[in-house]
Image (cartoon, rainbow, N blue to C red; front, side):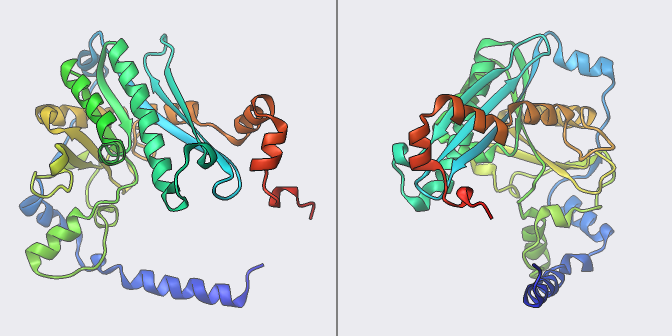
Length: 318
């Protein structure tokens, strides 16, 4: 049912969202000038040929890591979360898979911490598969799905273990960010022009500002990731007007332009703009609802499930 009151609420929300679109008062040229003068030089990055990609990789692996989480049960503390991560290597090699479960009844954490615990467990599981893959395989580039900063924040010690391992084995670790939540453009504009343009995220500010294969590396003093030794770039890799962000460790800054070209070259220009191999590992590692049902039916005691985790709502017949 869609009530008149709900329609009114959505219209009010639309008006508030329209009011915060004051970034549109800046034209494309102004934003590009702002970036060039204060953030990083916009340039065109080349699309690598198949031969150049092969030379970049050499005899090593490109390893791609992603993770997924699914939940059965009801409200806190009567639920179980299933975590699975995968490090995907060459097609002729088995992927590295790591799994974990999180259950408040066993893991004993307060209700207000459940979201933070979920984020931490997901990061740790992904890092474990990455560490295993790098430790036991000849990896050249390690692609992580999402910003490297989340690993630094949610699982600092495990992330540092991976950072040290990559440094030891000369592996370039890269984070590819589709959902950008930084505010570098807004903060820089407000500082440079002494004007408050509101809460505008880089995803909005950079919409249709760059041409395809254009991007810029963020200067050290502009990125919120500087204290974590993580460098960042924004790049448009497809015909879609949105940009993606790419993270790299500061130790590998001299390789950043080659890495940006690499990411562009393995992204579909007619797609969303992220490397196609990230979509592949995302599908392979996902624990869907059917998989969870099979797990519960075969491996969890029926009485335990019915008593602790089956919600009353699921028993409704109307």
